[in-house]
Image (cartoon, rainbow, N blue to C red; front, side, top):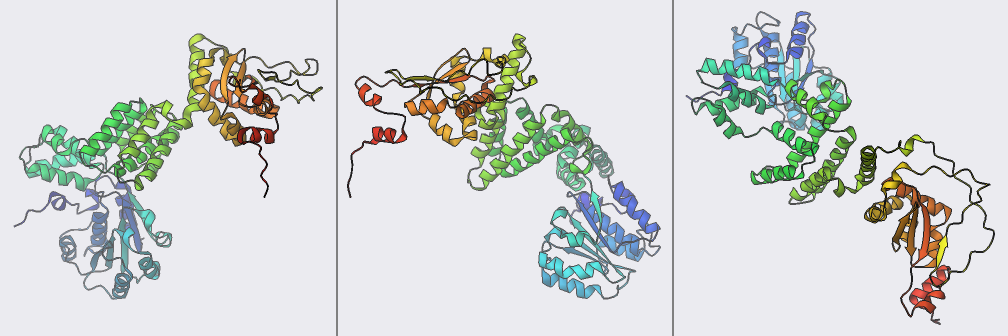
Length: 550
């Protein structure tokens, strides 16, 4: 005779035997006592949490010869037939293979027939989310107004895929993941009844690896029981690290910015043949759980996890800031999008890991990192209060030019005209962080300044693409352009202000802008001096001015 699996032998037969779902079983029992029995139920939750089992117990409670009763006897002919799966009036349907329109039509036609033996006809539709849209539409009228002797129970792991019109006609019960301690106690009881010698640590490891699914835990126990005594070392060798443990270890590496540990974890997953796309989606859900834990006082049903896992989320969330968690979620979302188009998804995931752990590798966070670095240096040297605490002065009006600017000499130079001191308000105080900025730091950060300028004005960004930084002294930024026209444009009030704002966003200082014209090589002076600020002259200088007649 074939061996019966443990999860089948120890399937609960009463509402009281269902593990960790008291909020469901007690409510259903109360409704049976009061005679308020619904015509359609929706049981949703993770695999192995007792949805189908509870549906069968409900069928026994409604059809027991002593009932309807919240405590079926399990000894009458009806209860025994339901337990053995031979009852003609309890019909279980797998929607994964019977979810089409024709299947639903056949079910609808049979539903109007009276029960063969029992009091009610119970339809248990497993994997209900697999019913097609056309099938649900054919089902709709029957679910809304079924015959008085019919009760529908829909079981699904993905309730969001069930049509809203069906959901609104059902009493919904959400099954929670069972805590690891409850599963471990249950495994200990089963092991004792079966005469299996098992270490307590091994049972706890099995319970943690099951991630809230009692059926998964019993299947693993059944598998390990073949070796005789169940030891911790044998269990660890069979199971390895659970998915949850891997995610927590990976998130720990992200928290401390340990790029090496995170990349090595990806390499181990590749070597073991794991699907990186599945792991990336699991990691995204993990980071989402950390964010919700950090931002919501009582997450409740927003996080599908056991109590032990929730406690681990709380402990790990303290290592992250809310903004950084959001940033990591965006990186993982982009990586998943890239993985769909790549045959080898490893590179996309590793790139997301590097950008999440190496600040310099992430352009989008460069400006914020620069500000943080500036504040940290201020704290180290005991600097003055941040500039942000002082009100920003109103922008000064641009003075009208009194005379024509002087014509540049061989080393052309144009300096922004100083406004009349009597007509202008006092100059704003020097930013506290400006003393920490030198020419070398400006040149290293110039690419980030250009990126900030590009966000403000693509025209100005293109103009600066050919310019170079030649000096930074006394809060004056010297830029060298190729043409006199460009040098003058850089010092116009609007452009100079945008350059200063971008500079301040990255380096924390607001300099004055000084534009100079790049010195031409020997022998080109005469040609350079003939180029005026007119754009047409610049084009002629670059491409020639021969007249071509058609």
